[in-house]
Length: 313
View 1: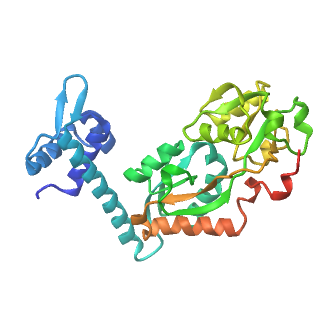
View 2 (view 1 turned 30 degrees about the vertical axis):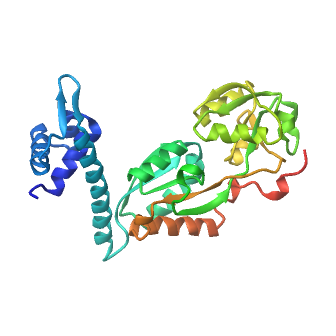
View 3 (view 1 turned 135 degrees about the vertical axis):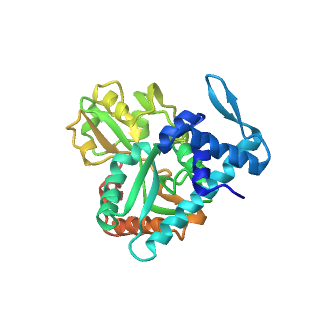
C-alpha cells in the first residue's frame, strides 16, 4: 500500500465534489495532485474508480463508491485519533462536527457553543443544520460527530443524552381572540387556518396530535422554515405549532404569542445523539460533559413548558 493519508483526503474530496477542479479548490492544491492521488489509489485497488465525463466532471464507479465509503470511514477514524492524540497532554483540541435540527438551533446552540469556546478554545466547530432525517444520515455516514435532534425513529438505537422533553406550543397572532387565554386546546385550533412546518417527521408528528383526538387540522400554508412560519403567523395568515419557543415568542412583541397546549400527548425528547464508536472520543466527551453541566444549571428551563402552564383551556 503506497498511498498516503493526504492522498486519501484528496480522493475523498474528489468523490464528494464530483469534480477534480472543485476538489483542488477545497484542498487548496493543484488539480494534478488530485489526479495523481486518484491514479495511485486506482493502481493499488486494481480497478477504475472514477469515470471522467466531459463537461460534467467525474462520476464514481460502483467499485469507486465502495472504496469511497471505506475511505470516508477511515478518515473519520483518523480525525478522531489525531484529535485524541493532541488532547493527551492538555485540553481536547481538534475539529468537532456538530449537527443540529434546524428549527431548534437558535435556542439550544448558543449556550453550548459559548461554553465550549470558553472552556476549550482549541476545539474548532463545523456546524451542519437540517431536518431530522438529515441529522440521522449525517450521524450514520460519519458526516457529524454528534447531533442535537429529537429522539425519533431515525436515531433510535444510537446513544442519546436527553436534555429535555419538548411539549408543543401554539403560536397565535396577537389579533386572535385566543391569544389572551392562558392556554388553548387542539379542539380550539382545529378549524382555524394552520401554517404547518413541513419537514420530514415533523409534519407527521404535528398532524398526529390532531388525529389522536379524532380531529383534522385546517392546513392553509406550509413552509420548511420556522422563521417564515413565525412571520406568517405574525402577519395573521393563521396559527401554528412548534415544540421549541423562547420567551420572546410568548410576550407578543413579535406580532404573535406562544401559548401552552393543554392536551396531554407524547412530547418528544431533545438531546445529543452520537454513534457508539465515538463515545470515548475526547472531543465528544467534552461536549457531552458541557451539555450535562448546562442541564444541571437549568440553562434550558426557559424552553421547557412547566407542568403548571398546561391548564385546562
